[in-house]
Amino acid sequence: MTALQRLQGWTRADFLKAAGLYVTPDRLFFVRLRKDLFRLTVVQEESRELGTDGNISSRRQALSEAFRSLLPHFDPARDPLYLCLSADQTICIELFLPPMAQEDLRQALDYEIERQLPMRSEDVYYDFLPAGRKGEKLRVFLFAVPKKVVDDLFDVLSAFGVKPAGVETTFTSIGNYFLSCADGEAPSAVILGGQKRGWEVVELRLGKDGRRSKPELFLSRWFPQAEWSRGAARELFHGSFRRSPRWFGWGDFSDFLRLVKVDSLEIVDLLSLARKRFAGERVPSHPLSLPAVGAALQGLREATFRVNLLRDARQEKEGAVLSKVNLALSVLLLLGLIGWGVSYPLRDELRVRQLRGENQKLEPSVETLRREEGELERIRGENTLLSRLQDRRGELLRVLDELSRIVPNTAYLSGFRYRDSVVEIQGSAENASNLVPVLEQSTFLKDVGFNAPSNRGRDNRETFSLKAQLEQRQGEAVKP
Image (cartoon, rainbow, N blue to C red):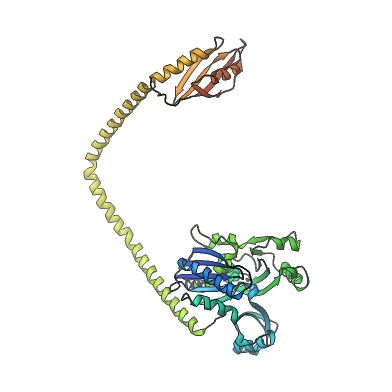
């Protein structure tokens, strides 16, 4: 890694908090993240149902109730909130512009919106992402959403004093999540997302050095499920399959695998990457929470694709100043830790010498106490042994009496052992197996069984080794 790459990595050091909210037509997914220098932690993860009756007022009411229930899980004044809208609510178009458009891309896109979308530029919120060149043309991805969709959300959030810091689509939020979690192992990767209404594909070009190179968005498309099996969607899939062997998935993509019928296609679940990136035991658990995680990464300065449909240059500048302050505080903290670390061995050595002197003064008294403690432990052990023998004397006699009564005359005992209510007997008999039911009939013994195999000798008798538990009847004391 070069010095420039190390410096670029250190510029992301911060102490920040941010929340992400993924909004679909019928559900909300909320995630709150914390960043301590480079360490990312999932602080909270929640989901809420909205219902799908299609009524505008009902949806607004459901949004209000759902967000009210999320307020106890974060502080809007301290945790900036970033929204991610599902792909079926947004528009993504790949545009090819002449080189001269690079001088003022936003003005060029204002003109292209009038041509590409059935609405005026003032009726949409939009942002764009340069994606290199194709021949002489500039490749640009345009992300847009009707203002009504966002304004309805803002009206609900403003009632709780919340003003989102940014809005993006799943194409960029999932890309940011992947680039934050995965170390590039291939020059490209395809990310497949599955939901109730359709599937979306994001293809990334990572470069020969993985995520250390500047990644580019190569493809971002969404189709309803009914269109995946024919036409442009089918060509899109096979083209991505030929270009990239590395596929990742989030949401419900199992039906997609059955639909395409490609035996060699293996899709890695994006949830599995979270354990490599997030610290602690808590990691994102719901597959549809990942867009919310990607949105929150914008607030932690961990996003590679800085897309914001509410882009404001002044807000970006203020955010940059704030992150410089955090970086300065991090440097001061690092210098303090270095100073503390250098002085710690000296203080530790002085303290060790002081303790050694005190230990030498106390050594004679400690040695005397050790001898007295050893003698006390020996006496306690002898006392405990005698007490146990006294307590078990009657119990042992009862066991011997019971065995002499029930063991048949054709059996001979050669060994007896009793410990902790367990009886072990050894001996010989004409038929050792017959002893088990005889002993089981005793009201004092239970769980009778062999603890060693029986052998028949030349005298046609079987040697046996049996083990049984002493059964304590309720109300009967162990002592005689």
